[in-house]
Image 1 (cartoon, one colour):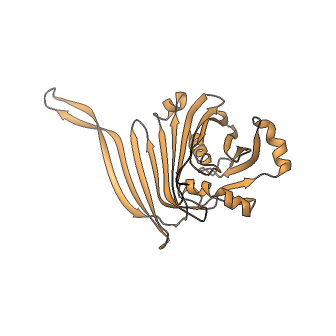
Image 2 (cartoon, rainbow, N blue to C red; image 1 turned 90 degrees about the vertical axis):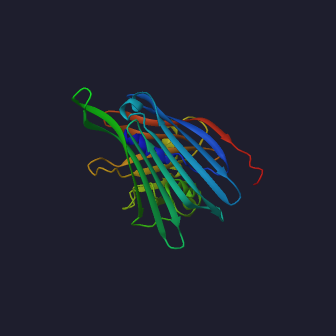
Image 3 (tube, rainbow, N blue to C red; image 1 turned 30 degrees about the vertical axis):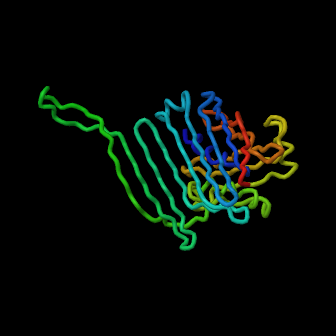
Length: 266
């Protein structure tokens, strides 16, 4: 379910202040394939944003109960979100990976700690039964490195900064850790009034702005993906639609729950 993974990057959206939300993700062929929980804890000068995507039903069966977690932490300076760390966790029944990126903005450097576990099957001789038996064991590894290219943002902080970026230009490329964009192949554009009018009927009532997220797929033989993101009149992500995908149909995401938090410190 590669498209389910791609749609994860929509949901940090154009929000501000502390909030929590859930979005249900549906695919025409399978029905509901999962849900995404998002929370943002924002203080006067710091933030923590967490996004957890959980597969359900057929998608869970096909992906071995895949769950992905993304966490961005950092500072807020002049209304700009500046990450200090970004964590990406992927977990299935058989594999687990935990990648921690730490930003050193003064040196324009990002360090990476990769921790992985994998369930593998080993063959060994059992002296009691005098037979070769199969045994499942968890293999683990750890690796430290420096990311080849420096990015000022991770994928979550980049979307949190979208409001400022779209105010300066109609379209921009997302360059961030967590978005495959070495060739600027992830871009976001704000639709004009005429384009928005033509697409409004795709969504429910109460829609304000509509953005288009264009994603060049990993496989160059696949067609680029255009994902429409609709916001309510308060500027909060409400719905999203990814057009018909070969054999699985249309992917849609709709807000099932949303709550703003009141921070006494703000």
